[in-house]
Amino acid sequence: MGPQIIQGGMGVGVSDWRLARAVAGQGQLGVVSGTALDQMLVRRLADGDPGGHCRRALDAFPMPETATDIVARFFNPGGRPPGAAYPNLSFPARVLGEFRSSLVVAANFVEVFLAKEGHDGVVGINLLEKIQIPTLASLYGAMLAGVDYVLMGAGIPREIPGALDRLARHEPARISLHVQGGSGEDDEVLDFDPGGLREAPATPLRRPDFLPIVASNSLATMMVRKATGRVDGFVVEGPTAGGHNAPPRGPRQYNPRGEPVYGDRDVVDLGRIADLSLPFWVAGGAGRPERLREVQAVGATGIQVGTLFAYCDESGIEEGLKREVVARSADGCVDIFTDDRASPTGFPFKVALVEDTLSEAAVYETRERICDLGYLRVAYRCDDGRIGYRCAAEPVGTFMKKGGSRDDAIGRKCLCNALMASIGLGQTRGDGRKEPSLLTSGDDLRVLRTFLNGRDRYSAGDVVDYLLEAEGGDA
Image 1 (tube, rainbow, N blue to C red):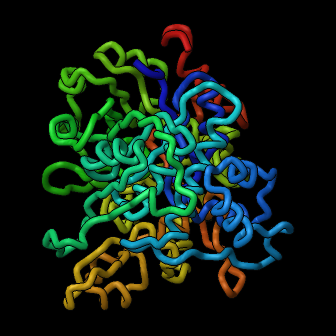
Image 2: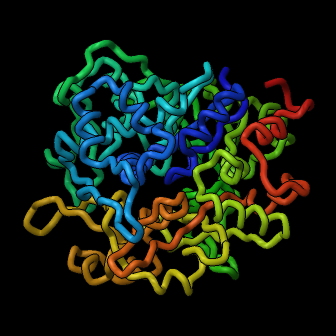
């Protein structure tokens, strides 16, 4: 049936290989975030690759010339000089090009390889349907490293199961590109051909299990009936989960704090999910042993937990920021705000209210609007028929010149740069300023104090032991 606990795939880089490896080594499903791994690999190499982990993984990459090229381009043996900027990659676009595709493949291989190193447990990768352009190359790189599960949310990943089938055979794969104002034209697709890579491998790969992340019974049923290949189970996520949440069903209403209000229509009927006869895990406010027992009683395999793992010793959050959150949680001085405007995707996004992060409006308003990573850009059809790309968090004037509205741009935060900063890989700007960070957590952050029980730090193993206490079952 699978592990009882899935460690949530928290991006960017919060769920890194260290956290996933620690959880998998405990017999549960450790998950790496697949978001922006190419940029993370480049920045780790630019910082001198502390511990040599990235280069060790690249030594095992089945395309040695590509690995050598990546190290030659980006590895700085002494690390970045003080005040120096990280190298930025070109914006992701519909046609990535051979080197950028190879870099995405290699970066996903590196993260999964390191997560699987030194144990016999299972490892998954979490991707967002909203970030489409690198998806196929990301899947292929993770599969080259032997990834066991693929989890995907923030959209309807109907075409992914069939793509996994083809990639396992090293065959070309294709998914649709969502184009605003599109009309189904021939260029509204994303193609990836493993055979087009330099030194393309030939040995068939194992096809990982696919777990879409769903927030409604109708989406789960549709995935079973209309996906392009086999669906192996579900993660059923409620609106108390961290990161991006599905928008409320029905007319948008807000509480006095300005947060979207979820109602009865947003509650998933777990009995109907169980009727689909596939394994499922429940996410969102699930970080308690009694919740594990509750959902297993109605047929669930287990739970997915993010927030408790996010602040453990092995997570990717920058150490000083992590220690601050834990200390403030112990004092009961943390809060969560479901921000309907923060994410340029338009999805509600949960923000942890912690001093000196982008979650505080005063800090964010001092940041110049810069979009130079581009993972959350969306494709749109230009007046001349070409495909362009825009992001609601880019400079307002630039966004409006591309057909976006001022109202849609107001309040948006650059999640790409902010989340990079929260794991210690934030960009340094020309005037010496460093990108401010942003943290996202589920509502369980409010009860982290109870779990801490007087401790000032804890491990991933402590979380697993807590969730699998004697009444909850055996590990």
